Amino acid sequence: MKAIYIRQHGPPSDLKVSDIPKPTPGPDEVLVKVEAAGINPSDVGSAVGRFPDSVLPRVLGRDFAGRVMEGPASLVGRQVWGTGGDLGVTRDGTQAEYVVIPQQAIAVRPKNLTAEQAAAAGVPFVTAYSALVNLAKVKAGEWIIVSGAAGGVGQAAIQIAHAKGAKVIALIKDASQRGPMNSGKVQAIAQSDRNDLESVTQQVTNGKGADVALNGVGSGIFQAIQGALGIGGRQVVYSVAGGKEATIDILSFYKHQNILLGLDTQKFDVTQCAAILNQIAPLFESGAIEAPKIGERYALVDVAKAYQRVASGVGGKVVLLMALQEAVA
Image 1 (cartoon, rainbow, N blue to C red):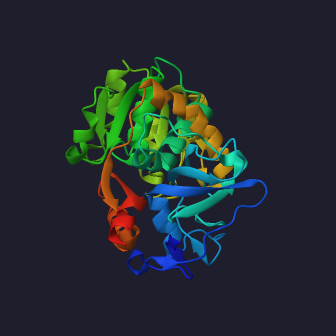
Image 2 (image 1 turned 90 degrees about the horizontal axis):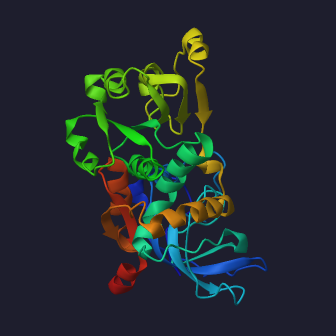
């Protein structure tokens, strides 16, 4: 089969398609024919070797959508979607014509999502849902700060917060990112280049402060978020791309009864992620949340270009489509 198979870590420009044997499922596994595979910043990190527990050689890729081809009769033919911190890191991943996963990792994809939409949803929506719902326990009427609001996780978080009846304060880098905030699901916008998160939050919450904040940047915005949280406010940190060390005013922290939570979805394997996707699926099917916007579609043969686009930080989800690969072949 065709696959993005690496024998050593290196830059995205080194990635190419390889021919490797089609995998054979074990007794408790299924074989999935991949229709589409998403590419995330973490996949770029996996390719260059940022995960110390990674195994070589391996197929890259966390997110996928496809159809079960081999396994129990009750599962064969099912249209499925999935993601997992183990996929593409400690076990062969999804950027291939086929992938083997445990039977317990089967998540039936929402009927109103195409394969490419489902493949683009994995990491962003699992991260956002885990942060907002499973960790922060967001409630209707609460004010939520979403950092990196123009990115994949940020856009997913805005939708989930809105679906749960919460009100969103979007934190973006600068005015160039205001476009995606015009969905009607954002009540206020703050900009890092203006350093106005605290003032915007105080204004829209009538001095109360935010109830929940998602920090997908790290130390670069840690203090600003703490200053914007109200009594009992919860901050969920899921990335330190913008710095890993921050100072904290412990007096203010305990006086405000704040809660600091960490989230690492890389530790959620494909089976654990399937359970979370099963929680998210009804929101897609009911129309409460919308499919992620696709920025670019590539064939496997163009994998280097696809990874370089993701590494560049240009907006919009990037997916590899097997139908495009078949057309090239």
